Image (spheres, rainbow, N blue to C red):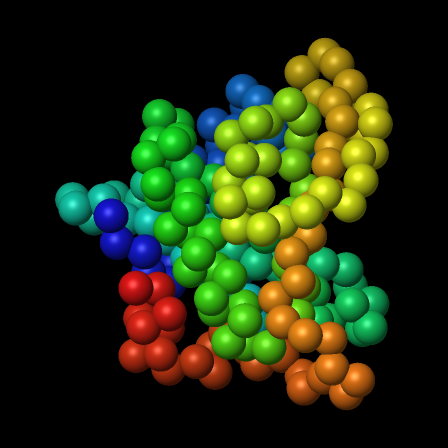
Length: 186
């Protein structure tokens, strides 16, 4: 399994993976499937990393990306993480490889905090986050209504570095060289 930066051409496969979770699970609270064009734009944006896990045959097996934790400027040193795998690939190590790559890149960019929001119950996702040192911040009970019932979510966080008095601005993902990104994803 190769972990690499996602390409705009990966967008249809990424949209198809996510569509499964939108239609069949409460893992995401999205109720409409984003288009491939939506993902192509997000990949091309260049501020945050967007990674693809690719099989030997070149097909996308999963994806991970970071996005703004919150929109207000003072939150800019935090990033929210998202990871999805093609159904059936859970507990095969792909999620761990995507998480490791995403965290390595975010640290290199200068982000100081990583956040994740997980719909409960989801022991697989919680175990993945715990393996990387994420800690629970709190549970928001009955936060989202999907598939005929209410669901709780838990917010998790991971400090990525010290909290300097005057932090440097995070670098855009597009500022990293291909060689540097490849090294971080090994």
